[in-house]
Amino acid sequence: MSSESSTPPWSLTQRRPSRQIMVGKVPVGGGAPITVQSMTITKTADVEGTLQQIYALAAAGCDIVRCTCNEIEAAEGLAQIVPRSPVPIIADIHHQYKMALAAMEAGVHGLRLNPGNIRRPEHIKAVASEARDRGISIRIGVNGGSLDPELYDKYGGKVTAEAMVESALREIAYFDEVGFDQIKISVKASNVPLMVEAYRQLSEVTDHPLHLGVTEAGPLPNGLLKATAGIAALLLEGIGDTIRYSLTADPVEEARAGRQLLEALGLRERKNVDLIACPSCGRAEIDVIDVANRAMLAFGERQIPLQVAVMGCVVNGPGEAREADLGIAAGNKRGHLFVKGRNVAVVPESEMVEALVEWAEFIHEHGAEAAIARVDTEKAEREAAKDRSMLLDAQGDDVNRSNERIVEIRKKS
Ligand code: SF4
Image (cartoon, rainbow, N blue to C red; front, side, top):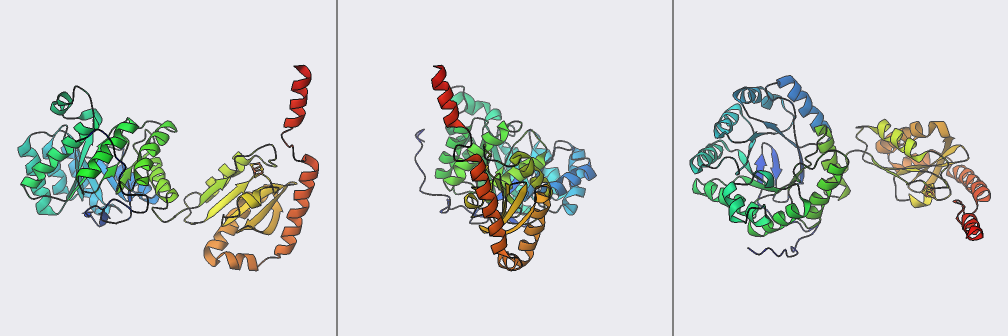
């Protein structure tokens, strides 16, 4: 296999063709919507605690949840968790193939096996045969940090994309021997370019669905950036059927991030508010950061699939955010609400967030046209024009006083 990466013939909209497998009732690959996964961080034996986390993950947009199955108590916990879970459950298995058998007995919908630490062919085949008979899917989860030592040595004592791909292909060969093909594959590394290269190579030699992730990405915000860099790069190339953010954070953050990335790329339908806000500048009439954060909190997990804008000034705000479904721009101690770029109402500055939520709910229920029809838009436009011209008169074009400062600098130099 060449170490040179070639540009795949796929794209964000023309996705790499892959087979479809089922994880419980959730399809993965074969044109199915890209799914979001996460993993619980409770002890799996703690049934109630784990279920609570699973419900929180599902509410945040997670489609499939993985739980560790590292001891017999965990397998027994899974037997109680699986029937009460709102989403399919995958058991994460390391080292002990018998835990895979126990998890299947507990009724899990899928397994994740790490080829780096379950290496005896008879164990791998025993698990695959059982999964085949029960109709359970398996993820071959290659991890750069726990690569099979033999492959590590073969590739010069380092983790390479080729070594990770070979590890996955060896595992597929064992599965083939027992006629098992309900497989998805991951080749994760904590190094983003390495991970991207490994998935690119893998995508050229197999049509099994791929599970994307940057392993051990770390705490927020760095982890979020690393994971997004790797996952988004591949999704933009049409590669990837399911994703997981591996963050050192509350797993709900992983689910939110996964969901938001897919929505931002247009790969999943919007579920919650997409809050956009200007970065603020010298023209801002409010503390944009504070208002935007309060608006984020107020919308919370409300399922209102609208784009809502918070803009710091009425001079440029309504124009810059004219594509938003709804927005508000500050000016002269007032908030100017606009719907699809049209001014609709004026509210006191202190009521901006409440007004946004109320209008968003109305639009979600009755549509933008009905929202516009219920108000006097001409009056709202007149008020906005008044505040806009007042601000322009007061601030002028050089609101950041740059020219003034330049004159001062020149005087002193
Ligand atoms: S909307 Fe107004 S305050 Fe916000 S960045 Fe643009 S000009 Fe500055």
